[in-house]
Length: 318
Ligand code: TXA
Ligand code: MG
Image (cartoon, rainbow, N blue to C red):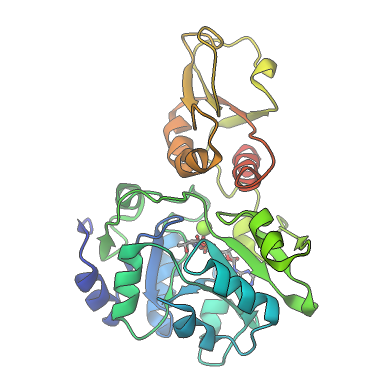
């Protein structure tokens, strides 16, 4: 039976307490949530996602005060970032406390922590006295969902409830930062721009986003965002080849009338070239172009949220 889709945080909290699987909205993407301290509930996340169990999960709570105690140690940079950017699209990877099940951390000595900035997510998190483990609520290897209906379409039979919080405001997964060996390092580019992190810390930070088969952030496998068709990256609309009409073009920013063949479907992420708007629409667009055999995607400027947008486009094209 397909899971109900409703904006009922009380019901979501009741089901989470009962060890059920609940899709929850966040400002980044929808998560597939379960009680992080209940191994059986966590195991059901992997089954629902069809996710290799070596992939560690992010745990979520309502405030820094309620999530940081699951870290055994909080370096100064982590404390500063949490204070400045939580609630928000930032995940901190820190040494874990023993109470966090190994299944959550996939056997790593660290755990990923986040305080989401979404009123409905915060409402449900406030109602439960455990952290909620939640990967993005898509089957393994698919684009992350940014509406409740995306979750219903792909995992409606797998979850017990879908908490509806409307479309996700940011639309890209959180930026993940780790602190191994005392070096503050971005492990996944995401909804919090690198510039904001470096601006706050007053120094440049390392960026190390893997895509090998046993990466530190395995969600970063290339092809992770592949919608299944051929996606060809372009640096500019000027590089568009002659089109046949059975193609789609993903672009960002003003397009002069007549610039693109009328028979081609154009998906403009943001007609004004606003990177936040482009980010918010990216995953829904990658879903929408799934029915085209060939898709041309024009990369966006490599700054701010553009770094994460280009990262996801490159993975979709891989
Ligand atoms: O915005 C988000 O982060 C969303 C929402 C639901 O919070 N969640 C999300 O989860 O994107 P997921 O599971 O799709 O991606 C989490 C990433 C994975 O690449 C995973 O490998 C990495 O976080 N990760 C989790 N724990 C880690 C750890 N201890 N060390 C390094 N990477 C870790
Ligand atoms: Mg994911």
